[in-house]
Length: 202
Image 1 (cartoon, rainbow, N blue to C red):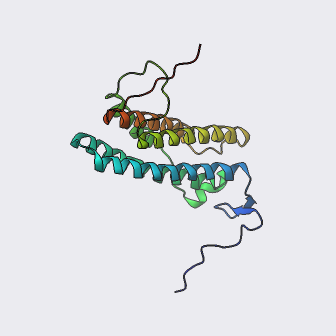
Image 2: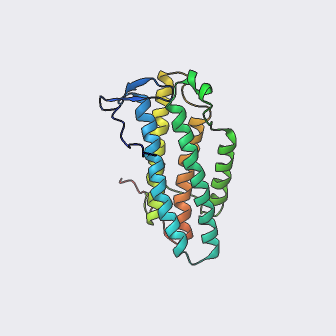
Image 3: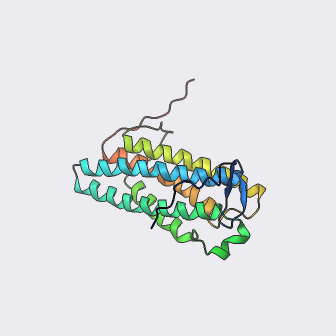
């Protein structure tokens, strides 16, 4: 069997096809939006590498087990983001026809359990903190800011195309950015890395 070509050339004119076959310009807000979701997924992949490396080097069983739990969860997040992207790549009226996988409230509940578990081990925040610390923590701060950007764009997209935001997607992204923030703090705290408070100049 002949291997299919990676390139199709169908997008050479600056258009791309949605799930239902409609072709639109590559600078359409919809394309920007699910392209940003793909970018976040790629950054999560890089952050996962950092977390797996940290798990290997960690000196305590407790930390290794905690990191392993978050690795498994983050891999499920990557799958959920693919689900989100597939829905964004399909017009609202077409989604049921293609039986696309949907986000559901249960995913948010699971995420909140992870947030609460990690947060219970952290000292309370008394100031804003600067992004930084271990490489893995920095990676999750990057994921957090990209996630916030997607959330803003999705709200704007939904304002202009009412109802196009998939069910639970805005809530999911909002909670996911919180998760990345707590995970970055958790990694630094678990490895004894101090946080740097933000002190505004007077």
